[in-house]
Image (cartoon, rainbow, N blue to C red; front, side, top):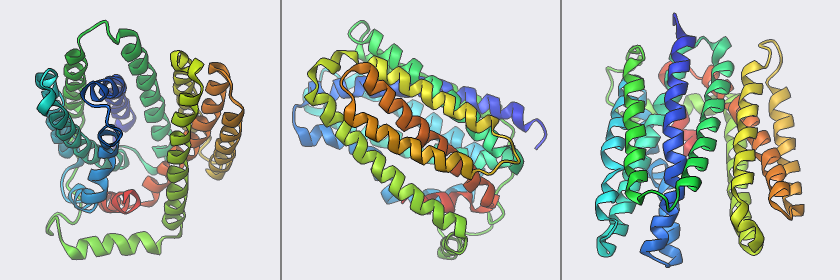
Length: 346
């Protein structure tokens, strides 16, 4: 569409704002849960909440994204998250119910995140011509990484200096600001199959058939399963590793900043990659660099070597994943974006 690049920067600014809030919230969430309970299962449940919406509601969200305006869905999701995410602040001193209120509120936010992200990717397809989608994904990745760094710095530096409730309210405010940002964006046309039921079995089957007929999308699915699954294992091992290296506990800000910077640089690399050059020259080196990061992680003994290892790992992972996502968005027709994304997510 006309002025698509300008509006892409508006969307990226909104992503930057919400990522600052979400990163700071992630830090304080761990602190709140630890105050509520020392039970390993209860602490782990809060982290697992993020996987529940995609597992149980992915298909429904995918069909909904392919039926309604993606801009309106993003607007509704962010307004809902702004309304929900501050509620646990009212129960911080109520140990009996505070934990359950926090879990339920976090579940609501994760459902909103699923709707927002699915609509977000489909809306990028509307904003930009196919030739500019890789550039757009790189810019979005860079802005998100900048927000990640800023949120971590704010969260860690202000921890114990401001009331915990302020983090929760601040996170709600960032969702509200994202809603304002989305409201500024131009309206998108309803997808082509809007005359069908949102939960039509035929519509779902059509989306699945399209997915498995396309060779690239099958390849993308394999990549997503192995890379995301492997990354989850690496992160779990990282927690174990840091826990065993007691001297690193007070110096995690350094690796966190290196990770954010490396992801931001990878986004710039993707956005500046010449249009005529094959995406494989980003994907393959990205995967190899991810493996190199894992090898370096095994040899890490201090905060700087840990940061170097994680920087290489996340630079490679982000470069390959951002490139693959841009190709997937280009390959998938606008009316199919939600259903294809839901198949991959589940």
